[in-house]
Image (tube, rainbow, N blue to C red):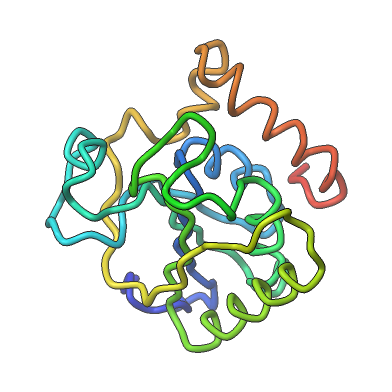
Length: 187
C-alpha cells in the first residue's frame, strides 16, 4: 500500500497520529473495533530512517506517532479523532505528562483533504465545547513520510504489561478508554 494514500486497495483508510508516547496510543487503538493495524513509528521530521535514540534527542523533527489502518465502514475518521482527543492532553505544546520535547507533540498528519477538514472541525467543536481548560494546540499537518519504529516498540504494552511505565502511565489510559468506549472494544 502506498503510505501517502488514505485509502488502501481494500478500501481501508490510514491515518497518522502523534499524542505523546506511541506506546500509549498503540495500546488503545489496538483494542478498537474497526482498527485493523497499528504501527508505532516516526513522522513529521527531516531525517531519513531515524532511530529511536535520534528522535529522543529531539534533533530529527519527528514526532512519535502511530499509523492506524482502519475500516471506515466500522469506525469513522471523526470517531478515531474523538478518541484521540480523550486519550492524551492536546493542550500542552511538546509535552505529555513527564514526556517533554517536540517528539511528544500532539499532531494529526492528514492523508487527504477530507481528513484535514474533519480534523479542523473536530478541533473547533472540542474547543467550542470547552472540554479542555485551554485551547487545543494539536498540529494539523500534511502527511509526508512514516518510518516504523524498531521492532521492540511494536505492541509494547501488550508484551510488557508489568513494566513500570506500562503500569503507571499506559494502564490507566487504557482503563479509562475501556470504560468510556466499552461497546467499541474488539471482542
